[in-house]
Image (cartoon, rainbow, N blue to C red; front, side, top):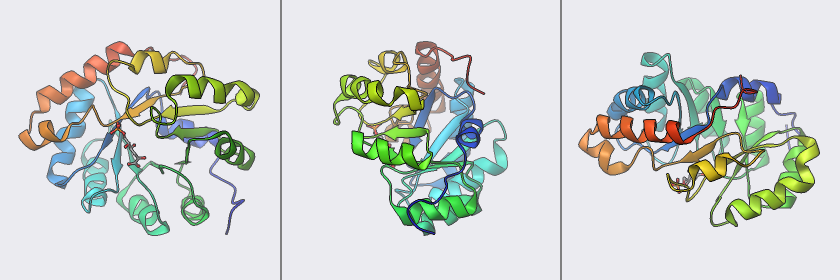
Length: 225
Ligand SMILES: O=C(O)C(=O)C[C@H](O)[C@H](O)COP(=O)(O)O
């Protein structure tokens, strides 16, 4: 397969993400933290998590959450190669996300039937992915690529194709609700919900509090599964 591979249908991506409006982006140095972390996020009301392949423990962490946290939709992030995709799927990831896009990673995701969300930062990239049939796109790096103004401008010409964006990169509690109020923003991603320091300290109450603050700042959308 090559560029032009038919992606997993948008409805499957939507179903995999469920009602999530805030997606914690998590890098774990020790997979032993995965389950308590997912439980803390769920206690705060967040039942989806993206475990990034930035660390060697990613697959183990996904496997642990998939096995022990049935309430949590666990996905894999930073998918950069077909091998990342295969390891994510074998570990039990229910969706996959890349910071950008390449045809080999895309083909591996399509072959595995993994609901897959590529990243875009420009109109050209958005138009290419939409033309292929993707509808849910990560907008990355959200703040550095122009922030909310840039995304609003991107949405204007593409709106009739009904794209659904997950802005990620530089977003925190201060701007979360403004991002979520943009029509066309499905969810917001970010690492602020699982700071390295709190994870290292095992401060699960602290993480549950961050999650519940984020849920309080986000409006549910009735059209989501
Ligand atoms: O790792 C990946 O796959 C990425 O695409 C990048 C991350 O999603 C962002 O770096 C998170 O951004 P912060 O919330 O500002 O930390």
